[in-house]
Structures are given as C-alpha cells and as structure tokens.
Length: 250
View 1 (tube, rainbow, N blue to C red):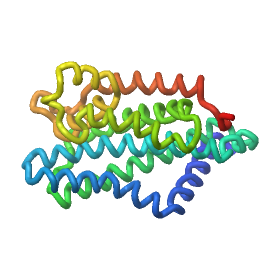
View 2 (cartoon, one colour):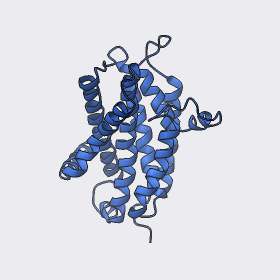
View 3 (cartoon, rainbow, N blue to C red):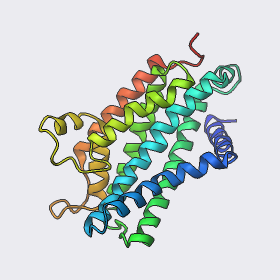
C-alpha cells in the first residue's frame, strides 16, 4: 500500500473514532455556535456588528479544531501509550500524524460550514462569494499554522492531566487580547502591537477581511497576515520535529 493510501486509511480510522464518541463530537460543534448565540443575545441587536461575530467565531473554530484538538488529543494518546505502540507497527510515524492533522482539518471544515450556515439562517449573514478565494486561502494557511503549533505544544505538555490547563492557558488569553470575542480598541497602546506578534490576531484579521472586505481591498486578501501565519507554521513544525515525544515522560 502506498503512503498516500495509508494516510487516507488512517484518517478514515480517526474519523470513525471521533464519531464513536458522540458526546465529544456534539460539544465540538455546539461550542462555537453557543458562543455565537451568546454574543448576539447579550450584546443585543448591533446591526452590522452581528455579521462581524461570524468571522470571529470562524477564527475561533479554526483554532479549536486545529490547535486545541490536536494538542489535547495527541497528549492523551501519548500518555495512554498509543503513540509508543504506533512506532512499533509498520505504519510510518509521519503517516499517523498526517492523518491526525487531516482529520483536524476535516473537523474544521465542518465547523466552518455549520457556523456559516447558522449565521445565514439565523442572522441573515451573506456568504463571501466574491472573496471566496481569499477566504479559502485564509482557512488553508490558518489551519496549517495552528495544526503545526498544536503538534509543537505537545512537547511542552508533561502529561495528559496537564494538557487542558496548559493548552487553554496558552490560547484563551490570546483569543481575548486579539479581539476574537470583544473589540480591544480601548485597550492600552502597548497591547495591540503585542497581540500582533501572535498568529491568533492575524487569523482573525484575515478571516474578517475575507468575509467582510473593506472598500479599498475588494479581493479580501491580507497578504501580511498570511505571511505571519506561515512563519508561525514553519516555526511550529520545526519545533515539533525537534522536540516531539512519542513516549510519556517518566
């Protein structure tokens, strides 16, 4: 069997294992919708700002599926000895990790479809048909960056019990500081440049621009934000190659 066929077969297995845990699958898809409903309900009828919540939740969905999901699930698999046993099988290790990444991207795409469909049906949000290439490219680059960072973070997680605390401690402050949930226009002057160093802010800006393009940028493409996310993707991948562990820490 070719390596490509092995990757597809392993990805199919990961998908079956995901859906065989219906509680986890349900809350994976319900969580972003819950945030969307809460924000639009608590903040009231904000007109065009209601539409702005959709790309914000889309950014959150990409991070949840690609970063949080991979970082936590890989950490748990390592502590359970699954990764160690994988290395003892004929399956190449990179095939297994590639399949896990492909499954995370598949979940991300489902989340994007669900959030966009819910926004269109519940709030009348229009789809970004004219800027669809920029929107698709942003999703591709964003998913690559956060999948690589998710693999990299597993090297910092000592055990499965610490995974939720470490992963959430890394991602949620950046989500708030980057303006994913609430605007940070009135934040201190030093905060916005600091948030601009991290990929969360650039994913949010690129997704928002592709979904709601400004008049002076009809293509909806933010090249600089994509370059920053690509740089983080390369850095995360190199860090993961150097420090990724297949066995639990003794």
